[in-house]
Image (cartoon, rainbow, N blue to C red):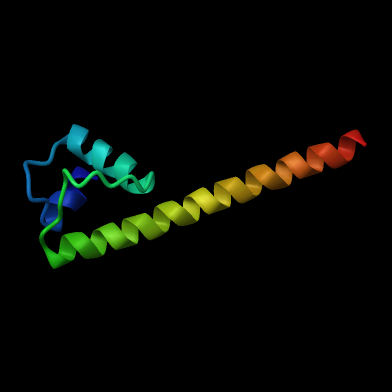
Length: 76
């Protein structure tokens, strides 16, 4: 993660803590604005990262809801 952020132009000294924080804030769609990407490459990476994260979340939520529904139907 750190390498990808550095490669696309992270504006501040990127370390593991910043990369993790950036990832969680982005996926949670909180976006406090304390990490601001200034390069086009960084912004493009962020858009890609958000889309992948949302897709993973939707897949997880869908699988979880299918499992809950299947368990509810078995109980009846």
